[in-house]
Structure formats: C-alpha cells, structure tokens
Length: 34
Image 1: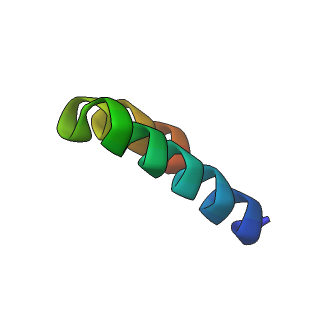
Image 2: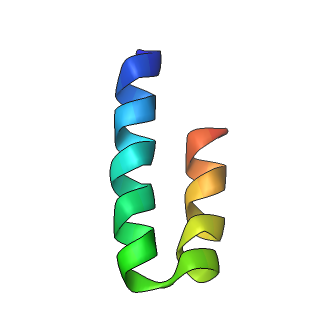
C-alpha cells in the first residue's frame, strides 16, 4: 500500500516539476493525506 502511494507521489512529483513546482504540489498533498 505504502509503495503504491510512494510510486503515485513520485509520478505526480515528476509531472509537477515539468508543469509548475508549487502550484501543482499543493493540490496533491490533501489527496495523499486524506
């Protein structure tokens, strides 16, 4: 389970860096800790 979350976060993080650092990370955080 945690591996899936880490893998998901890693993918989002790589996409975030490609698009826009701060504005893309903020919406992701509540999803992970929901």
